[in-house]
Image (tube, rainbow, N blue to C red):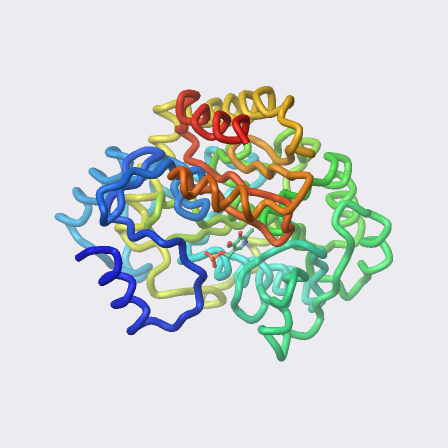
Length: 388
Ligand SMILES: Cc1ncc(COP(=O)(O)O)c(C=O)c1O
């Protein structure tokens, strides 16, 4: 089918809820995708922050194929060596206090379960989250999302959500009390325009939670799985080495197979009893094969250090480009703030067959490339930005 026919087909039978690029993807490999018209695009948006290992990494593809030939699925009603090994591997790379995993299917579901665990751990109801954070589109997650129109489209919101100012510990202090079950924070606010807070802020959040008994949740749906140049933002120097009580994950975790997870400490895990949490597809075999192979591929190919190399190279190379006001973010989660609106740059790059992302800040172009992206590939972007 040519592109026109594909577009017509999708538009006819799908609700028009996404603003799409004018291309149809046929296949992908590493940092590249090929379209229905046989054109090749450099994907610095990483399939929507999902393809950390690059498109169709052979190790991940083979693991999924091998598993598909054994059994596609069985739920948590049976044991599975693969599920056990995936959970063990995730726990082994997490901050040491996070000792248990819970698998689900998406980022919003991971956050729903994390907030439920916070309420079950504390017996309280209130959740503090931050202006600019994005946590997903199901009821509790969208109620914690103080960004743009999200809470509005999620109405009626779940009661008990309050908004603090990101990076301002005093604003948290005025909101947190004996009714507070948890604090949910997106450590680098990606969709808001790659907004960051200093490491001390995370230490102060940890201290406040310790003082009040509230559960600290890091939403690492974007920052997790190596993207910032560390396995997790939690426990890294960017978080002043502190660990939350729960980390939530999705996006990169399965290299494109839908999977989410909560990594949980003993305090929160021990508050959960049989049947308190659950989901049919969580921990299914294809998803678990993808998780394990994703983590192995990241390790085998040195992708975490590559993420830091990517960041440094881009920062150095763009330091003399006058249209660039600031570069924010870490590793392979970067926001390039332009002096003016970035939409024309985004469109121009797309014409040159380079895919990037926008954000809710009109001046900020986002890069969420595969962690495997090579210097010669970044050069293609840099050349385009330098020549205009
Ligand atoms: C930080 C963050 N949290 C949660 C979500 C929701 O994840 P999902 O779309 O898998 O439900 C997203 C999705 O963009 C996200 O960026």
